[in-house]
Image (cartoon, rainbow, N blue to C red; front, top):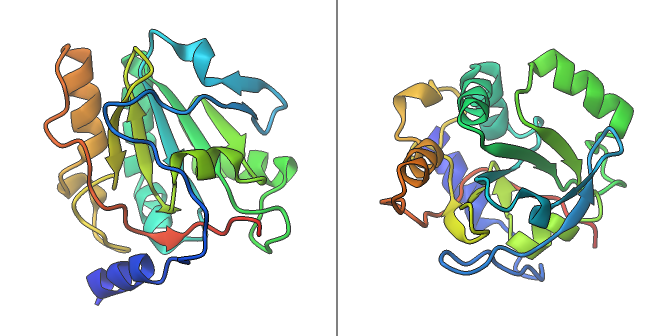
Amino acid sequence: MKRLFAILGILTLSTGLMLAEAVVGKPAPDFTAKDINGKIHRLADYKGRIVVLEEYNLDCPFCANHFKSGAMQELQAYAASKGVVWLLVNSVNSKAPNYRNPEAAKKEWAAEKIKAAAWIDDGSGAVGKAYGLRTTPHMVVIDKQGVVAYNGAIDNNPSTDEDPRKARNYVREAIDKLIAGEKPTVTTTKPYGCQVKYAE
């Protein structure tokens, strides 16, 4: 039933959304975005480092499962220990009831013990749309040259209640391969989760 819910969540994505796409093997779309602390982040500033983008919304049960279990924070911490820049991207539009303003986001960051480098306030949807981020969580891994190395689901188990640690984690695999100077074995998968609520 949980897997059916995941599939239905993917199938109900709005066909009217105008989203670009982060294409594996092509330069990642550059962006300039502000985090919840007011700091400006530019992808160009991170050239020479691996970057992970995580589309985030804790109100989504798929996303929540990764955080409530602690699995996502563990992966974020692991990435940070390897010098990876992990950016949480929240593209919920500012008019939606589950939008987190910076104050609320900071409280959630502390409560969930998030280990990402920053929480990008993407209420405009500029970053999410540029990368074609459709669900939470939808993941993109960018290599040290600024090229998209992986785009898709975080793992192979679209569940809202099973331990994510037992799944095959494509993001961790991609990070490890890139650190070893190799290309990820799996580069593209279909993201699962809840539809991102972009501004119209």
